[in-house]
Image (cartoon, rainbow, N blue to C red; front, side):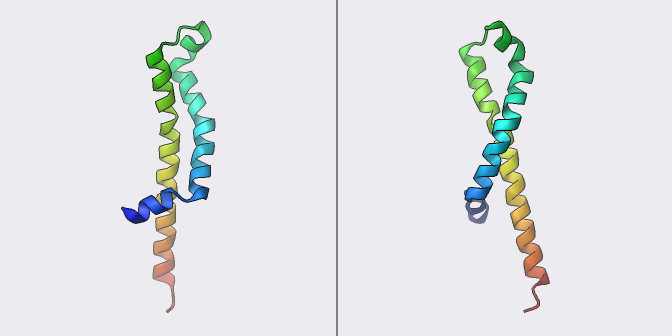
Length: 82
């Protein structure tokens, strides 16, 4: 678990996850709340849900990066001729 958290906090992982959250998040928000946004009927709850929606692509990107880093490290260890 400690290794996963260290990878998740790497600047390049955080930057990538933020980038995906800022691209995919608004798309998800518009899919879920677009009509209310356009009609001006967003409630406080809907705005909170929208904020939480941004966490979805951030989390998916972070978990994917952690998995990829760990996979690469395992491949490096098994192919290391030492």
